[in-house]
Length: 493
Ligand SMILES: *Cc1c(COP(=O)(O)O)cnc(C)c1O
Ligand SMILES: [Zn+2]
Image (tube, rainbow, N blue to C red; front, side, top):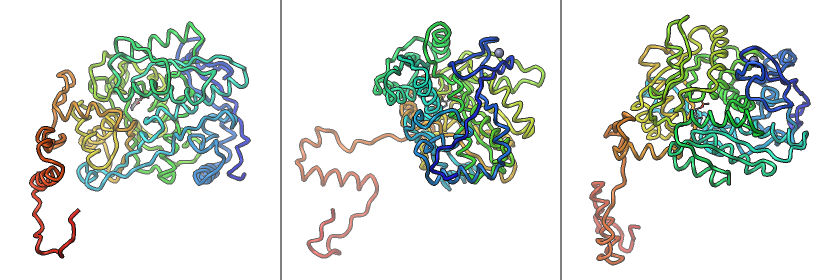
């Protein structure tokens, strides 16, 4: 096959229920099992045929596509055969998602942490979070449905901690009619940057009092009783798209996962579901030989998945928790919709990779903020959830959970700029008490005004330049260059 051809492989995809095992065709958009109500995953019934091609076949194919190929395969569909091999090229939506860089931790940061690690910068996606990976897949499926079923109106809805709505609104705006985007946000619980995104994309933005979990219940009710397309990660097309994070990570590491530990923040648990599933698929196909270890990370203020796995075996019971304010606001979820998926996949993951292959850690709010700022002072662009991952890495190291020679890949799930308000709260020591975050003076940075506007007023243009430069020189302790030591006429500009 030439790498400019669109693949001819088409899968027989089915929704499979994680509760009762019932299967359904993909001709309808399902979120939960019509029989038992449990969540679903999409499966390729012809996966065995892919397996027979062998791991080397896929490594070569994906490496060739990374060097260029069919335009529809530039983003997450580089891994078309493993993603949604039912889509036609004309349905695929590509807005530049995926292909995010794996950035080695700055040497000084690595020395501080004492472990080698990389950040995978998923904030470099088009709407500045990993959610674009899933939306690209969900919207491509919707386009296929619109084309083949002649739908004349598709109302997409989602509840969001900020980034889902930003991504949903972006892709909906690009696809255009008959798609219309509606997003439901917990009032006052998303950052101004995140709120600006669906507004700018022209979505209908609705706000409800409460937290994300409240909004999620409302859109679930809507999806059960009205004709709307739910775009939360309950929608298993999104999980498929997000698996690309695992595929890209493996490819960037030359398909060698030896000694690799992957850290992922857990909110609604769609991301960690997709990451585990992606690695399991690669392992199934022989594309990778061993599985990387997975570390899920939660804040003390939103830790239901941590609590489940911290309980002794046999006494594990999933209990939703009320959330407390968290700087890792995108993961501030007490009743993660994808928990049943995590439970199923973690069991499978441990079966293949051993007990240590899957771990959930808990970190403090203080550590989340300190780690985000520390990372960004070393040239990274981590959001608060990226800080949460670094806090998780430190916790793993301090807890003796890492073996010698192991290294980490941390998910910087969004761009730092989406969460600058938390940085400002830290720098101005203004976190409300319930966050339990106090600034470390060494990490604080605030602008210094050289002079007041009134002072400048009285100086005149030339006087201002001289005075401002003088104050900067004094602030920096600069030594003045002796004028007599330079040739006459040279200006020091
Ligand atoms: C959505 C989101 C998370 C949490 O991911 P889940 O799939 O909900 O577990 C973490 N970080 C950022 C930036 C997000 O947008
Ligand atoms: Zn079922």
